[in-house]
Length: 187
Image 1 (cartoon, rainbow, N blue to C red):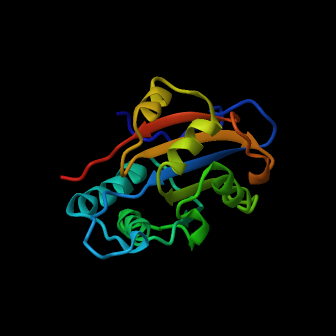
Image 2: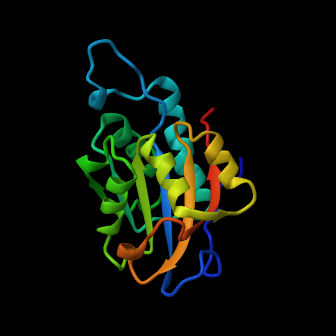
C-alpha cells in the first residue's frame, strides 16, 4: 500500500474554498477479553505495535492534523495516544461518544461541526462506519486507493481525503478525492 499523502493545494475535488483534508484512522487491532464490554476492549499486542506505526506513517508523510476527533472506546483512545506520541506536537483532541458505532450520517454530522479554521481533521474510530464514510465521500481516488478501500479497510488503516470547501458544513458525499490509503504495521 502507498504511504499517506499530504495532498497539496492543487489536490482535491473541484469546488470553491480552501483546501481541506480529512484523515480517517481506524483503531488498531483490539483484544477480546472474556467479560469485557465492547466499549472497554483494549488493544491486542499487534495493535500496540501498529498504532505507533500509524502515527509514524502520518508524521513521515507530513500529514499534520489541526484537530483530532476520537471515539471514546478504549481501543480508539489508546490508538490515538500511541499514534500521536510519534509526533513532535500533537493536535488538540476531542473525545466524542457519538463516534462509537456511528454510521455515515452520524459521522458526517460530527465532522460537519468542525470549526472552519481547521484545515486538516483526523477522525479515529471504527468500522464499518469509517470505511463507508471514506467510500461515500470519495468521488474519485488517486491510483488504486479506492479499490484498496473497497477491498478492505482493516485495523490501523489510514485514508486521506482532500477537498475544497468554504467550511466543514459543506462536506458532501462525492466531494473529496481519496489521495491515499495505507495500512501501517509495527515491527
